[in-house]
Image (cartoon, rainbow, N blue to C red):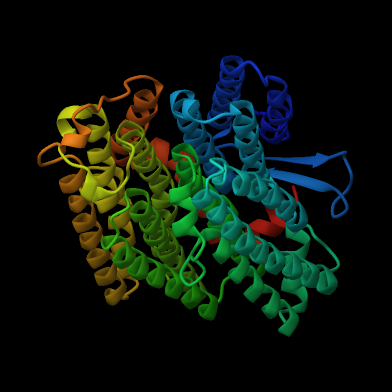
Length: 504
């Protein structure tokens, strides 16, 4: 079924402007926001596996604004909509702690509209515009609690996010000056015909720095460990689950694969960023005693897996290696991207459930909550096993695919690093289980009770996905309709961009 592409942006954007009118009707505003997120999920499911283009105003390319639905953008749309719905359902009960709920819901939908616009945009300037919409909304949501910690983290996030946006905007200006176009297909065609030069190489470097900052890849990660713990739990889930992927990783790989084309040096840059993020993130996480800060560092580490898998695929392509192994590496990276969106969102929601019930997220002040909060413990355990790569959960399969691809590319040291980081991740989450859910209940927590309403529904939904995705997504028909088209967009590279993005 073909869904008009502007609806993915127009529906949440309209909701964002309407919801502030419900200033004294929190329940009505919450209901409308949940209906909108459910509608977006339904549209994303119906659009999965389809390709479509929409020229705004019917203006001719390259002058017109074009929206593109393909395998890669469809995969990200589905991921964003799943996590958004879970976070919104979780917010029904959780955001009762805060005032001005309609404003929170408005900013939430504004962020969703921006992310959907980023993954659908067929020209680089409108990608930047939608990126800024999502970014500005996220800055406000990180500081939504208005406490000192939240405002400081939001300010730091805004400053570094603005630096990233400046890099991206300057890169777009350079590209426009060299090629005379903003349409991705036209830029790609111009670069293919005239070849690269110093200006375009510099622009590519600025794109890598800008999108690397948005994705919080090491060494561009300084904002994330403060922003994620400070934000409300549903926003932490959105930031880690989908925002750093759409504004960072998705935009980066779209530009590198479909506009510039991957080369051996660029491939090694991706691999280096992936390895650094994996190793630095996981070892910084092990020493953390703040639950949400520990999860934030693991977000950095897990994004390294995604970039590493895609970087290995890029290296095989640029060396002219077997396309099957390149596709396998990219499949592992993209599969881990959506897996991480699910299990990391679940972990942040579980941290919100623990903090809401106990009033703290310090591991040393917790203990014995398995008896007090059995549902939260079960959901958190499933997510912990998934992120650590324990079979048969979804994280195991995507990590296994990345290891297999590294072995096939004869990059044995990368396979070894991937396994070691996974083992350290397991140790880190054994620590989480030990200090939060096992042992004796402190006297100060004897009164703790678990919230069994909408918060548990959202977490159980994501926990079920952690179990099912590892079993279902690798099954032929589902993989072929959802994952394989996304992989093909990247493996086809410049050929894809000139033939498909232009709507020919």
